[in-house]
Picture 1 (cartoon, rainbow, N blue to C red):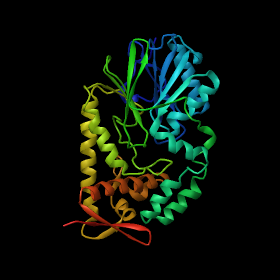
Picture 2: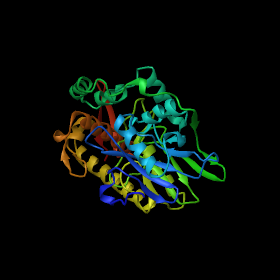
Picture 3: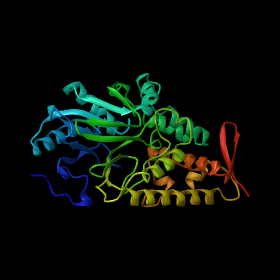
Picture 4: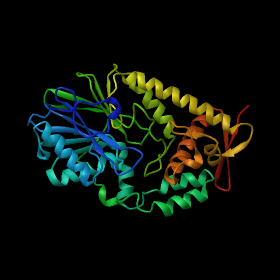
Length: 345
């Protein structure tokens, strides 16, 4: 029997059967920010009777144990996992997929846009390099040095390997069943979501989250563009498809993807307005702007954040300022390698 889930306690261990053959399993994470990541076990897709798993979790012993317990609840075991479809390359989604492939021989699939970031990780040149460069361009040199010293082992390249298959905009077919792969760059350059049109289910990874907004502008490789602009366009793309139930990587299952997309767009519109207001009539760098904003749903001051979350905040502020520049609301100049922003009249 599967557990009955309180939507307010989505991270508690157990199995939630979303509908017959579709099971949500929250797996623990080793940090205080996000307590769990949802993986999904899909029955009845593969012709050989094996399971399709969406996202893999973080490769820690506690996550493997909880996954094994969840599989036992539905009468399965680890060796029933045949395919692991991963929404993006962040470690809480990808590293256990790699570990399970080594153990089980399961096939791992990942969005093609993640290829360069994965190469950099494996070359041991990824890590925080891109994020630290962004901090320095934002005028946060001291924060960059603090983060580099405080989190020297945030990335361990040995935890990443190339997938068995790179995914583009395509349809994956498992016998009579199909999952549409939709590239949704923004949170990472190669993020994808998986749409089950027949059952009206959207496996949204970190692209559409029900209670928080995904971090923008933070990945192993330089985004090669403006990640928030990409993210907002990827949000709009969700409304090109019929509305679905929302099956996110963090948080409870939602009843309407479209409703949450509208809320996220409104949030970023508000955030852009607040960012522009902090720029005000001065010429300011992104670090100064970030310190003038409040953060998280609790509206914390910048100084109340940990160094890692301060880094994420500055990176996200840069992303919002870049969109304001694209829209002609601010002008950008560079002085001594630091970008400075002035509101346009």
